[in-house]
Image 1 (tube, rainbow, N blue to C red):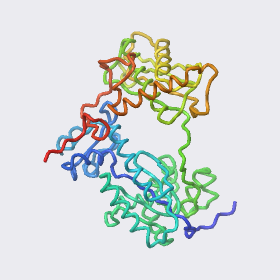
Image 2 (image 1 turned 45 degrees about the vertical axis):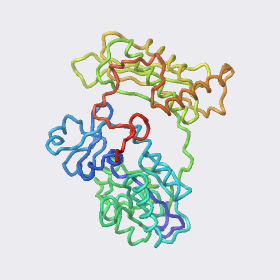
Image 3 (image 1 turned 90 degrees about the vertical axis):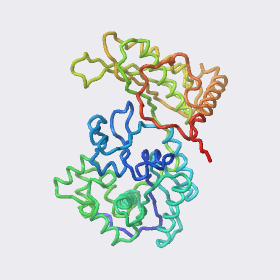
Image 4 (image 1 turned 60 degrees about the horizontal axis):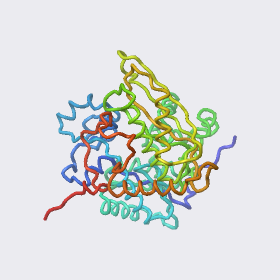
Length: 431
């Protein structure tokens, strides 16, 4: 196969990757400026593992994904601030960042909660850096979140540029890679494990072949890359050469499934509490697909015990259930979920986790079943439910099947207020 020419100068378009720095930790700092410059970690569900570290926490040697109890000594010794994950707050702050980005480019691909790609057209290379610095200052001023920005001619190169923007303070959070010599120099400084799309398995393989840097990977024979790494590896190499293979996805693709699952704060042994938890997850997953105007035709419910406990009996099971017609109605989804739990529950076990998954998702406006005779009434009821919960806070109104006391509910002892999404948790400023 003939090699495609190296084309660092196919620079008709510029793609920027905007990445929020230590996003969850930065969200906590917005409303508590005393945390600036202080080490912060954010914990996963049930306060189990560390999922975000500020730069100050990283410098202390705290590892990503490490169980909280293992890092407790370092945390307490160094006065590290610890927070439970507050996804309501983080999601709202993310929306504000993305809305701000739309002011700077009509072409925005929201890649994750804290990352987005932007397409810049009609800019001279000399203008890109000052424009990105302006974007960075605006987001910090309007939302309070610090970001790093990488700019180049392809997505993968913009990811590489963003990596350098974070690692080098002298770049002031912005790295533009548009010149072929600068690109080559940058790729020499980037380890192959840090290249977007490579991952742990491929980086280990490449290391075993003597490939340590992104530049060494770019210089490999394209036929060898395709033979040993497939089409994905070949596309990554071409992207690093400045040949765009990954377009911006400006319209989010319709998801194929939607899941809500949680580990319990304490093991559940009776069916009543297990049904309550699954009813709660069913209600939340129904709410999530309504937010995207989707309906579901099929669902599954699963339960499992704690497989890490060698002293206890183990059991796990799941069941698939078909709806009579496509729906996003919380009552119907919860009713079906509870039926599923009754079928797979076995007494004598200590359940650690449960979940509800919806499949066969379709646009609600394009799907209507023959048995779906009360769609209009159902939609009005769900709309009212969602509007009340949006205005007064999540679960202000909920189904009785979800329970009230919820002893099993996820543990979040160190959660901060939902400053932007709950009226009763708004910050009060006194003069």
